[in-house]
Image (cartoon, rainbow, N blue to C red; front, top):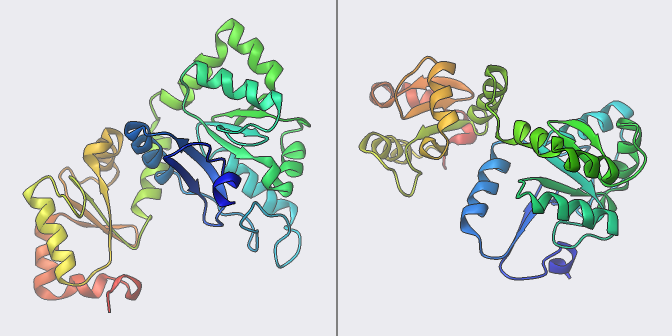
Length: 284
């Protein structure tokens, strides 16, 4: 059944899917803090859905035929960079389908490392393409910061000399440089046609200004998404420099900064706020 195919061996179980309904990660058991971490991590990394026509189970050939080499490489590049630590394996974290994949999972779990996985058994195109892309013919394959580390033997050697944990901590927990944070911020402000960076969320604003901003957008029947800056200090501080706007909330339309609550109010009063909103973000 569906639960078994997703590797759900206990309840509760959360499966994270890409836009083509392919599983990209999972979380077994009741662990709210880790669930929040995973949601934030996955939501902040735009996912390359790959070539059109891929099947829900990991697909293979698209409706327009086999994807060109450049398209496949683009997809693979997106996958290996999807998470700071990425393991391509047979099966899933909760249900590895070979001994080598199981040992790789055990090694990463032993060091309490945050990582994502991709089940190569569900996507033959990725399975074969990755062998050529990285010139590495076997699985599992571990990538850190988008760069191939190697298979299980290399992982063991690096674990023994301590370099595995050092490399992972540098990629997953180190400070983002200016280029990295700016790339992330650009992705976030373009996540939806209308994006509001605020304290809290639509359902529970955590300051009066954010509450008024939400109410204003809802009053004018504008579809919008939000980002809670209280949950991510890197975004909170980085956005101030990125857009040269020091306070929150901040409203963006089609990736362009509109301003804070005062600007929103002025534009709402003269009708320019509604005019700036694309048709796709207007409620009927």
